[in-house]
Length: 110
Length: 112
Image (cartoon, rainbow over the protein chains, first blue to last red):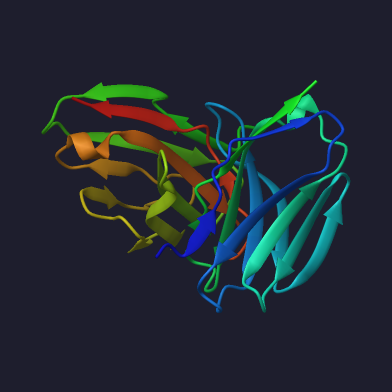
């Protein structure tokens, strides 16, 4: 079983929709949670970073961590064509090693 | 404002050849790491370093060597390339191990 599971999609939504991306994990010791966005032929870039559980909001993006269910989510409000990318979740417990999901491919249709 | 710079961007090797993938960062980050990204597998950690002179293995270290002689540079060496090492390789860095990492744009490596 992988440490981190993420539905690969692909996910296709109309412009302006609310997008929900999710990851589940097996190691209850994970404390650091991140979401990255990766455009084609580019490196991942950080979107959201949270420590432990709870919610964090940054503009159109909201990250949620539910440690009791071992489940994290990223919500994108008012999705734009420029949000079309692959979204990667990542998590860590010691901080020395991060474990990544396989990524969810998102297309926002104008 | 270069961030994390990886060279080369593309490389084709023959089985058994060796090569070094270069990674440099100009942000004075202590933590640096190498990942490989394969379809359906996500990013997997190869090696990491928490500072100059200190390296450790990640999830998939076999066939790769690293060294960290300076804060800025963290090269990844393929000792004897194998087709299974065909992948996209990413270098990343951060101030501290538990902080979000900045990634380079990757090296696309094909081994024939």
